[in-house]
Image 1 (cartoon, helix red, strand yellow):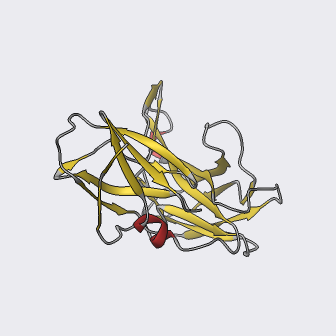
Image 2 (cartoon, rainbow, N blue to C red):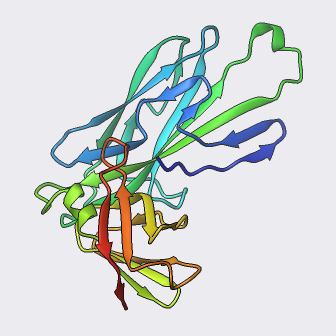
Length: 230
């Protein structure tokens, strides 16, 4: 599972990001929106036993500023302790590519209430922000995410490993090894594109092995392929 995180100290607020935001449990680590569905849901649970949380949700295109082509309902609400509510995410009809997936991000900002006895105190409040990938998946794409993962191509040119994705699905690595050396900077390959991953040495081996993150957020089976020199 890959979660983007940031921590900014503002007085008296800290913003941070992870999938289980303190008392609020987010029901998924990634969202797959099949184009044939009218809407999809994202369950949220308030694990607190006493205090409610204020929930604010929206999507963006990846830059953190431009809103994504989805309507999130409700965009702002109060979630009582020990209660569950699902966000409803609906595509707004904006034209998107039909030959490949499109990537967006779902943001859930959670703000805790303060206890009555803390009203007159200078209390540091923590505001948590969860940010997860949202994949828009058009109808009738060729192949499957599993086949796309299995058929990745790898070539080494100097100290750059090129990973090529010929399929229509985004591929996120759970792990990527050149020989027995793990490449920590490998993350995701967009559909019908390539990425370059830096390597420290060129004599690490002649095979590449990898696992991808599945639609369910777990690791795929392990694949191995010979490395070509590019």
